[in-house]
Length: 337
Image 1 (spheres, one colour):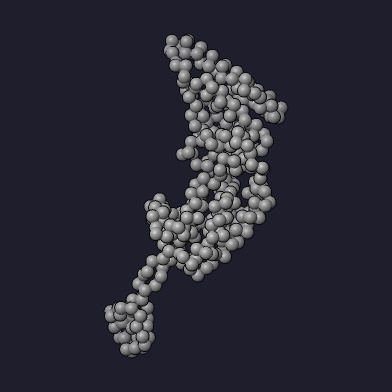
Image 2: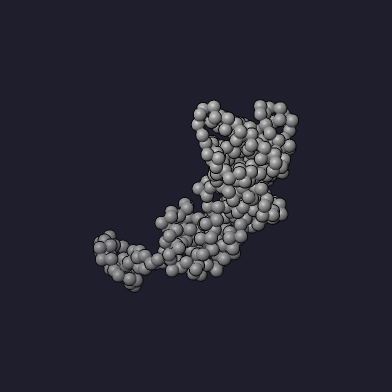
């Protein structure tokens, strides 16, 4: 992991400009070059390395004494004593079978049941932490620093021990809670106990904060992001409408701008050429290998804000010429894709 970047770091800036409806895991391949097969593992390790996850694992031993539960009635075979209301139908069946004659009673005994929404959330999160610990020895480990991996591994082992606690063994944490179940947890009288778990649940939907995603990108990708940021700034400076970043057809797109990290593995499932484009023009940063430059039909080298503005000027001039030739007029404040 690199040091915390300044607020104007291009990768951090662009990450904050994504449409919130675009899931973070969908951004990682095209934006950062993360292989598709490693996205889930990297997202999981990142979640486990977050501060909310560390706080949750540390707090669970204390939470064990205050876990939410419900009281359920279960039939229990009582010999020589009675615990709760006698279930006469079941008791008469037991007597007629000759087992214990008439000193056996089937009673409806109250029991504490911990399989409630609050604990299902907790178990699901602990399983995620344990799973992240196991993934620290796989391919995803190459994307994180050793100290981060050791932290996640240690928390994973702690989570595994907590899951073995008798109280949690009968809790079904095999799936993520539905929105209705999460509302039940947030409205529960035990909310104070599960606040740490809810924070990790919220973080699971957004595993990377804007300054954390930088650790996944190389110097070449950072330069791509720097040029992207300059292009977006140049359009805004002219008063052009610039949409939020989103993912479309394996590319990061914003109007005329589209990008796919050149480090991502391209197979037959991905179409087109990786790189940064404005319309049909390939934008280069100066760090590309010669073969990339040679293969580009039309390209523009962008190293500064004036270079970015020059690209916009050429595109606007071409657009105006096309509209003039067709006899149509387009407003100066719009630039559709």
